[in-house]
Image (cartoon, rainbow, N blue to C red; front, side, top):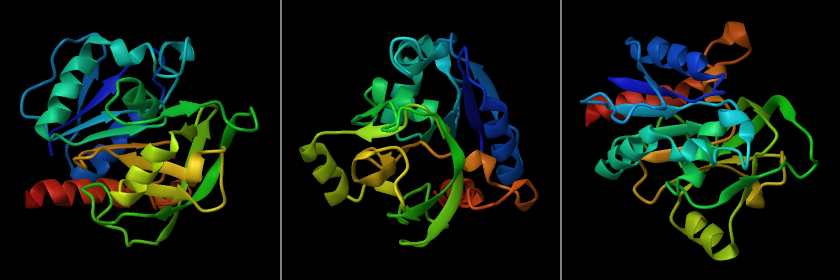
Length: 223
């Protein structure tokens, strides 16, 4: 799998994402700077990592969404290239309008850093095929602005089209309908607040996140 990890000023999970992709796929991803205008040719997978791009000024992800590389990311996503955005990456995807809704300040106005239980709502996507629908997995979160918001019509559409990928089992940050991760309408863009790249090895506390990367590798090989 030929993957790329995008680094923005303030990214702090780009190395974690690169390590996870290499461990699961066997191939180190290409590291791409946000100021680059173009992506490498022949990419199979693009990851937008967590962190605090531009210090979360204005709104989390708002400035990064206008980085030069995001035009290339949007074009690649439009061609069907899988794009994963985790935490700040999810925020960037919504600000870039590659996913609907917005990520707001956590309901309790506090930074949340702990492992949470997630229920897999859709196991038929490129990112989730290694899981079973209804399976409960445990993945770390670390965010201050992870409260997912969308209007009722958008939420109903996400639910009706099977685009809710993950849901918090016991709530977390005030997210509408406990949504933790969503897909775009084509199913090739996933944004999620929890960090699967931090849960790929049992020696580091758990491996439930590994299935997401295994799903992508298996799906791309099958394609």
